[in-house]
Image 1 (cartoon, helix red, strand yellow):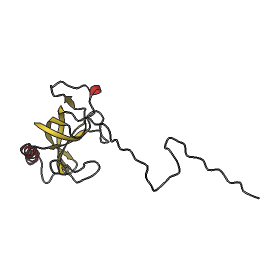
Image 2: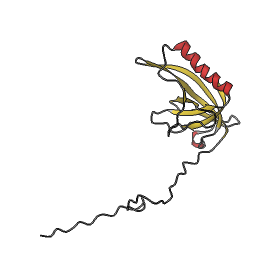
Image 3: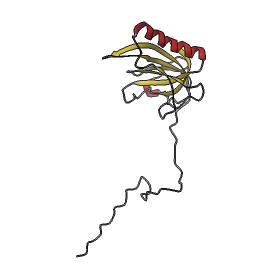
Image 4: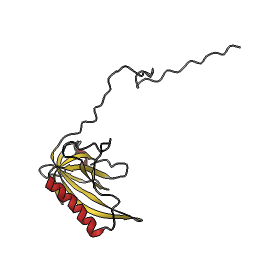
Length: 176
């Protein structure tokens, strides 16, 4: 299934996460497309799964460091992943080489190729979205956190710049 005009919240295209997965967290702004993607997941579970799934690839986001609340479309986000580097294309449908991959930032608009799969591990079952490929249509380049601190009143460590070595304390001579 191709889901058009997704809005990327976070993505791992070249470097995997701590679980060795390339993943994308995204929102679907179009309400009809959003419901269609949720229905695809629900129908696949109904067809192949049993009982209640351990996890779903869509969720209501609560504000956290990893998944900030979606201020634009409410709080439904989707998660898709894969174990291999996904194919990425530009708006002209030209494949982008891994070494030429742009730094894709939050707010990038893209089309996503995805499918569902039901997984079983021991007694657990769940359903996931495969991250098959991505076509970037409007790039918002990630420029880094850019967080810098200003000097403020309050706690002072006495160490100075982090580039400097901490000063060694002089040993006191003991009087005999």
